[in-house]
Image 1 (cartoon, each protein chain N blue to C red):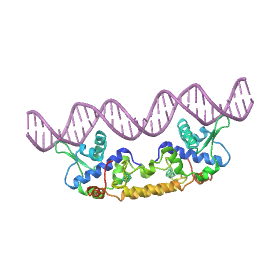
Image 2: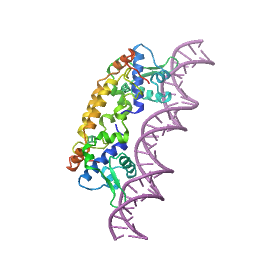
Image 3: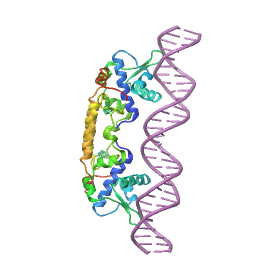
Image 4: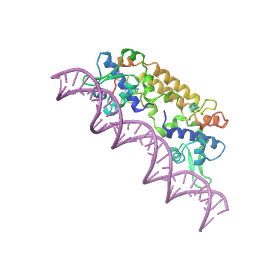
Length: 144
Length: 144
DNA sequence: ATTTAATCGGACAAAAATATCCGAATAAAT
DNA sequence: ATTTATTCGGATATTTTTGTCCGATTAAAT
Ligand code: SF4
Ligand code: SF4
């Protein structure tokens, strides 16, 4: 469904959001440990998220990653996915054909339009703040 | 969503089904040309489909790939996907966590169960025969 | 029997995704 | 000023996926 990079990005963002809710910054090692991901690779992904302005960072001692409260409320999972994997999940097709304008679709077109739409709807209607809250309450978990 | 291998497998199977409907065998070069896929790679995938007994093959001159009429009616797209990509699409999770038994799920669990179920339902309810008929009528297309 | 046209199977190659290493830059604490 | 703890950025390595090559095998046609 998603690339590994994107999965890490989603999990990391949720964790950072939780920490930011309590006014804390999350360090790279912290995040990697908490979401059980390779440290150096996670670093690259966090940099992408910073560039996309989904999260923010400060360097130096006591530095780390954090998120604005407003972002948590407005950012959907779809936003993270788009930043890392692009919009292929929503536009890509069941049979991987290019340039199918719909006039002569591939045989599974109608079926997949249905699936893609429900996927998009779900991802867009789920914001990071609500996921972070579930995590904070211990209802949900980011590793194992 | 699916691997390239799986996409080729689905397209190839649909084309082979169409040919078999008219009592014709499809050769490797024929198939590759028709579904616009790399010949040698397609060969490997067809071998996998033969091993999985989704299609059948005969060697030698006038040989090629074909499909039993009964298979077309009973085989779903899901069957092809399972043969090539395994059941990861149905069991795999939004955040790529392993062994999440549901007692303490990841934050997106509920959302993804919904998506996976609709995906599975669609793939299982679509049989190869119906897709091949659309192709035969010119309503659908396997390349470009 | 020989030629011809097809699949099969193993080794190899290229590309993409995933992951690692390390020095530079930054900023707080000492 | 120096040390310490952090992110940043570039180069490199590993693994997986995708793709190629070619000889062996098979079976029909000549
Ligand atoms: S016809 Fe539809 S499902 Fe098929 S490749 Fe095109 S857009 Fe995708
Ligand atoms: S909790 Fe659910 S969605 Fe999350 S990793 Fe586990 S099975 Fe997948």
